[in-house]
Amino acid sequence: MNNNNKKTERLKIIIAYLKDCNGASLKDIADYLQVSEMTARRDLYELREHNVIHYISGVAIFNPDSQRNNEQNPYDLVGEKLVNNEKKERIGKKAATLLTAGDTVIIDTGTTTEHFAKHIPDQVPLTVLCYNINIMSELIRRSHLNLLFAGGIYHENTQMFESPEGLSLINRTRATKVFLSAAGVSELLGITCRNHYEIDTKRAIINAALKRILLVDSSKFNKIRPALFAQIADIDTVVTDDGISSEWIEILKKNDIELLIA
Image (cartoon, rainbow, N blue to C red; front, side, top):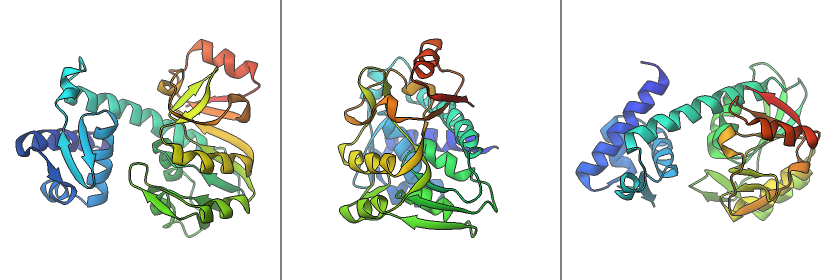
């Protein structure tokens, strides 16, 4: 069974388990699935992103409104999520081809940038700054990387750290490339994320880098989220999947933004 099929089965099992138990802790779910708490936590974040569950302070509860408010049932939503996950995987792999030995890069928090981190080539010497625990966990095993970590307050929903001290480190750093994530991209209202606490860090990494590379799957275009952190003109390159519309291809071309399709 491949990794995507394994994940699909785990998510379906979690949904059924939460329905039966009327809720469960992270530890209970990890024990039931016989996986690590980190793996269980990632699965719960995916289900919460589609509003299939409520997940607060380490406790998950099935959300019955997810069935009433969607034509798809939660099992279908799992499949939809995995389709997006495959797109993000391709985007991350494509973005990794932009790296050059000796680069200093900054990696933004996000699921697509996490895929990018996984595809950083072995034995290519880089200096990498990040502030996301999942990305750091991936990179810390790479002996050829010089790692910088901007710590601070931990936000469980994004697995991001942020603080004035972290911003100070970013502001003292100069990078050849920054790899950004976003939850929404609008021609009129700019590039947005879900959480206002992300704004200062995202703006700082944009200002610290020579080349700004945005990694987004095509579902993010024409979406608007609450927290504005950049305008389209701030971006040099967009890496996305082949679902991007002809309208958005023209918008990026009009703004002299390089487009790479994975």
